[in-house]
Image 1 (cartoon, one colour):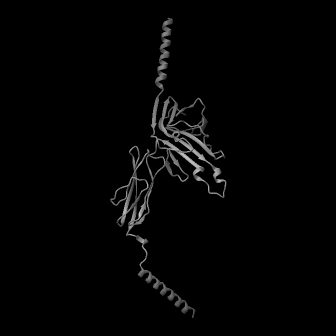
Image 2 (cartoon, helix red, strand yellow; image 1 turned 135 degrees about the vertical axis):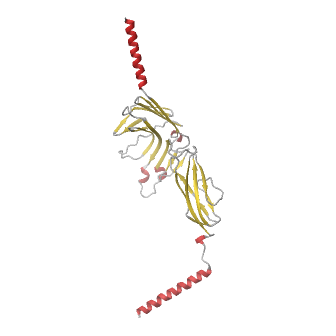
Image 3 (cartoon, rainbow, N blue to C red; image 1 turned 180 degrees about the vertical axis):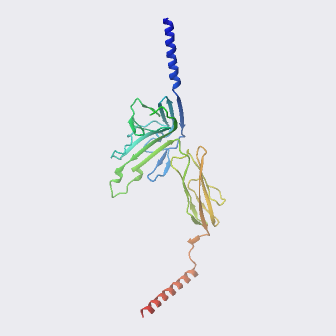
Length: 324
């Protein structure tokens, strides 16, 4: 009898264990990011890919991979960089009057069918925000091991379904002391430094492709192209078609000389490392050699001078007649 009861209890416990096991749904997502795509963004919003900075080891910002795992309602997020997770500064607080910042931050944005969760990490501090909730996670909720940051938290409800995960790394330096002396021009290059990498990268976008809208035969025309910051997968390749059946250029900002007058449509195409492309076009009108920049002929100068004298004399005569 005791053996039978023991067998029944064992089966019940086993059944509960199996039920608990099968009621937990596991979900996994992995995002990968190519290396070498950290951007420096200046105070004008212009972005430049960089591999070196005197302020920070750029590899500590260069994202490689991010993962999402769900067990029941427990979410685990990881973020890996090429270098190491760097501890510097603190999480940005807009209510802090001290705007002198020197900080490295790592951020997750998890979007589900019900909520958008923001997880920010800086210098051994981790903060979770969603809806009206903002809380500091404890050290048992996150860890840093070399190149990897791991964060865990519980979803707000059991009905949430994964939609997307975005991660970013940033280095921000703001030095307001550069603006304290009104007698000197502020050093914007050192007063504001912002480096960043994001994953996954937004689709490739061209910010601008332009040249002067007029030119002349034989003139060296400057063409300029730029890519929307943090879009596509670097490195990029460039293709300028100048519209005159000449050889294209693979430079980002080439010059070109037209040999015939006319209206030309130029096209700037960018291809990223993943094979995606983006294009932008414009037009330029090329006039005969010298265009409006040609000097007037001696005959024309003489004609205009005589015409001016006649006009002046005529005005003087009219004024004299009126005053009589």
